[in-house]
Amino acid sequence: MAKPPPLAVLPLTNILRSLMTTTVSSSPLLLPPSLAIMSVLANTTSPALNPDKNPVLRYFLKNTFYAQFCAGESASEVKQTIASLKSIGFSGVILGYAKEVVLTASQTKDLTAHSPATEEECIRTEINPWSAGTLETVRLASPGDFVALKFTGAGRQALHALSQRLPPSPALAKAIDDICQLATTRGVRLLFDAEQQAVQHGIDDWTLAYMRKYNSASRAVVYGTYQAYLKATPAVLSAHLAAAGAEGFAIGVKLVRGAYLGSDPRHLIHDTKADTDAAYDGIAEALLKGRWDGPLKAPSANSSVFPRVDTVLASHNRESVLKARAIVESLGAEGSAPQVAFAQLQGMADEVSCELVQCGSDGVKSSPPLQAYKYLVWGSTGECMKYLLRRAQENRDAVQRTRSGRDAMRAELIRRVKGMFGVVG
Image (tube, rainbow, N blue to C red; front, side):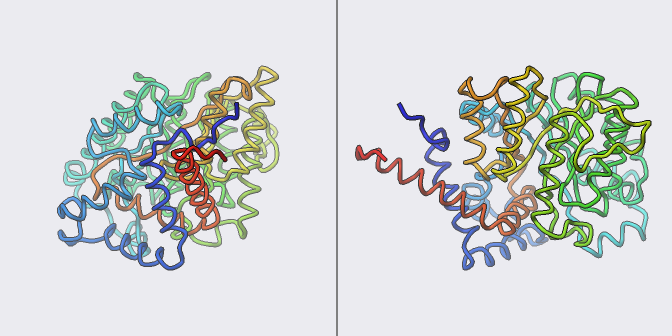
């Protein structure tokens, strides 16, 4: 009996919603106005354009774009979404709290020119709500899941400290420690997300500090996010690997291509997509094989020990996923499979995700089975607007991949319609 296509595991509502989203995202006619509208909604100060205050707008968005990419507005909705994904066959989820800040050029400049507002105000209105939301996210996740953490969501105090490469303030440090301790207790892993270059060097500093504090020799609780499209990433990651090897703690690595193409300085990014692809695949191979190789170089002869690496390969690029799968499967056949999770964003590259699920559940192709995760955020519709805007921009910047996803969803829908009438093939 022929194996069903990977997308057969998705509910029909997901297929229809994905087809609608990818059709808009891949259309030269429909995408520009859609992006313009999304940008206005994500950055508006008008109550009439705020989905959290406009019930008609909220109803439309929540049942279309929000439902495609997000987990829910309440704990019950989030748990239902997670249960649905795991019933399909996903190993787990990467869950994030949607509250974040995306800076304009003038705001970036202001971070270095001015001090944050009063400490008491920042703690009450920014740090405490961010901490409460992130702690709730850790509680919503199950053991073995990941929680994605964005420091910019903690507000002006965090932004100022990160931009100046300062340690977190006492109040913010306590909040981060509370989150790390709860995650450790619950068996949940934390992904410190990469953000814009205005704050990324500070995030790298904090990531390494908390890895030192919470990662043991045999397990990573804290993972850093490394963007392969940045020319400096191999050097940054190599330095972190060397520190982990020298000091005896495991390093957590989430490898992505990069999500801030529209805001990061262009000269810091690889000149071509092919260069980014080569960097991603080369770094992934070195991490999976556990050795200095390709783009990853030991900073010095005294830092030659390669540490234990727990890896999340976050990619929508099917070729990269296939290359990494081949490495994992070959190492698994030798009895030395690395600790690796494959991840894609909820609502994107479902054909890649479902292929991983299918491969991971057949019990034949991989040993141990491949671990497939979906990344999704939760929060009110209004809180998720900046996240949804980035997803729309990402689809714009990867038109060919979006068209491939659209075609895959269309083919699956046609297959199901034919099946209703008894037509095979």
